[in-house]
Length: 231
Image (cartoon, rainbow, N blue to C red; front, side, top):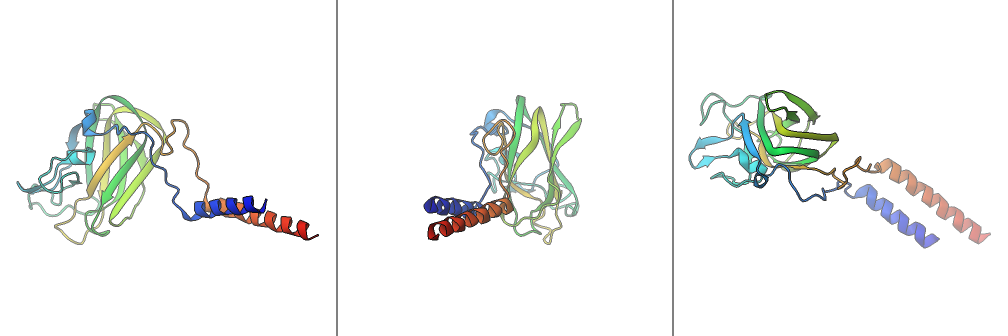
């Protein structure tokens, strides 16, 4: 009995201090270029010159850009090149895309990378579905976010959405360098499973406080067992 309690306590402590983020079991990225995804529109990507420009397709699994291939960097300036003034804080960057047919999306993972919270960063992102005629409905809003360096935003949608047309907006964070403004997106993946790999309601993850209470209860049980043996 005592050994079993010790083992359970070790598992609980691991749960409290370890990561609780699951990775999708589904290997199919519904939004990958290789699956026929087409980019319909964008607010614009970095485009300084022919040898220093980005490609919006690279955030969907492509490798087309001549600089920083496999990443998509949104534009730094209002106009192409280095004209029009830097994109202001609060500016809405966006990308619109569609799949070959309706798909069911239950979760998505957004991979971002900035150079400090005031270089190539966003402070909010929002996912929309559309009807193909310009009408959009929000299905997820991140609220205010702050991140540094490589960051993965893994999101379970409140309910599955079935759509062919999608849009994501990124709100420009305040910046400190006019040459490194537009957010850098490394990858955007959509999945037909929730993050725990299921297609039903996502499995709840016990909160650390709940795990701690369970651990205290097991400690009490262990103490009671020792008292009975002494008596």
